[in-house]
Image (cartoon, rainbow, N blue to C red):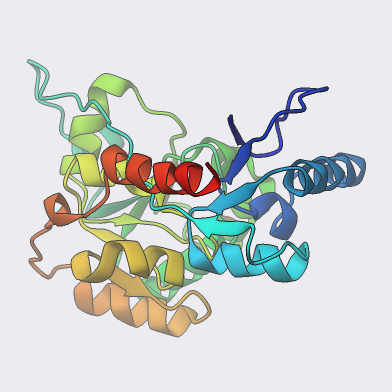
Length: 274
């Protein structure tokens, strides 16, 4: 049997494999203290009774070995894939996003689903630096959690860029095509990922991507995207300034990840046990 994360049915006594998407809840916990303790205990119990624990990236696999003292023989990695995303084509009435939002210049998109990335504040600082250099760039925030974060909103006011940031949250599905295809770039500011699932929409709409240069992203995306230094606001500002208006073709169709490849690798672990 295969289980994801620590969700093992009570009383289950047969052999099983655990697939862990990431260790984010251990490194960047969102749960309250008692919930984190319970999650950690449940995860350790699930791992201890499993025959294999499969991670989606080698960095997390090493952390699992070091942080939770899991035997290297039990840990494996499995290549994952970007889920199929059904895009919306053009709707009968053309929608101009800049006119709709009254933007006086180009915009980039920040979209991490329902999750606020831990490095998002540096993106705001980079936009402030660009503004100080005379470059006005708008940021459309489509992340639901970020729109509710009062600390982030206070930073926007502190940096005096409130007129450049639009907290939109979830946009209508039928308008996605226009938001993404009219954007200059899509930016992601994560400092920890196992597999860059958050790129799914940007890839589906063939958008150019800025992302932090961390192993789990660069090992998957290679030279198909542009990278930012996650620890340097100065580097972020310079890279954005010198790259924003470059004409760069995307080649996501060459990404060597598919459900078939994941299934083949998973079958190897199953057959090895048998």
